[in-house]
Length: 247
Ligand code: ADP
Ligand code: MG
Image 1 (spheres, rainbow, N blue to C red):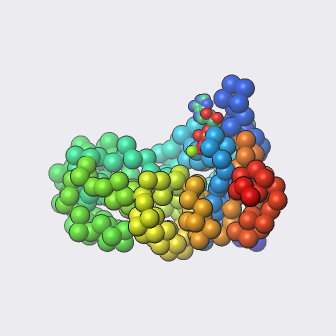
Image 2 (cartoon, rainbow, N blue to C red; image 1 turned 90 degrees about the vertical axis):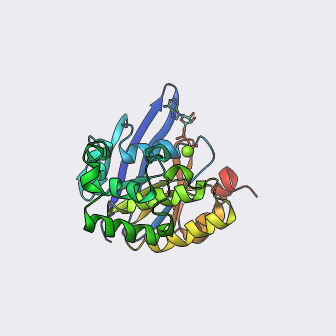
Image 3 (cartoon, rainbow, N blue to C red; image 1 turned 30 degrees about the vertical axis):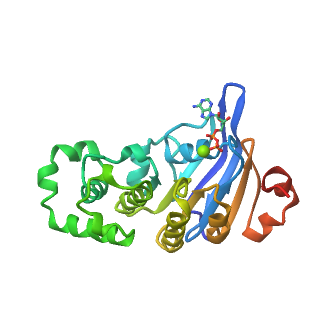
């Protein structure tokens, strides 16, 4: 059995009396899309935030590429190749689509902005960033101001920014949210190919997308993982049916 790229051991996180993560152990294996599903308030985003380093667990650990990263912040984890997408606010709306990818590729947006003029003249970086935009279907919008993109296009741009860091794993919190049928279909097709490059931990409410994409699914209810398995194992699991999927 190959070593998981990313895993947690016994993560616990409380908000006052509420146990948002209760002894969560989860792993993300090379090449897979591992979907994390569960009702609203189950603790999915809280788990993603502990994986990305936005919040610290009360106990337990997070491991990435054989290293205990529990004490590292988001920037340090991103530098190791752990990409988190869909922090919409992270896009610079007054800059163009291409500029956002280039800035993302540099990884240190704040520092990068100070040298912006020079950076935009870097031909290799520019070519690489255009290639990434082409992959998500946004190359024709390279010169568009980010603030003028549609919601769906911004979401694709978020993926492009994450991609430009050449990540070793992706964390995605509801990438299909608000995309509509066409947008979801495009994103689904894109994520399908992306898993070969880096495994994806995918929090998603769109069950069509989850059942299409997931190699494995974990079900989180009240902070606890009640089941992990393949799509058919999860769909046929009576406990999951009761707790989440409904009849
Ligand atoms: P999900 O993403 O599965 O909908 P969340 O992880 O966002 O769930 O939230 C899990 C629970 O933790 C919810 O009851 C939520 O209200 C609570 N929660 C999340 N973040 C905080 C916080 N910073 N302070 C207090 N409670 C929080
Ligand atoms: Mg959430």
